[in-house]
Length: 75
Image: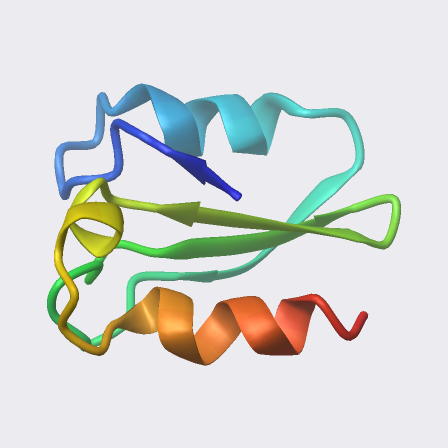
């Protein structure tokens, strides 16, 4: 799980860096859940990558981390 640079700005560094990883396959980018709307889920050599905005870490509201992290840990 990584965080930082996940807003809607196309110049944000985290999505760019994930896409540049050799062999990384982006599964999803953006989910309609606040906070953490701009989640990216990718696979790199079958290892899951969950990229979230910092909001998901700092807010206790139910968010995309609560939904995706448990499922990705089962891969």
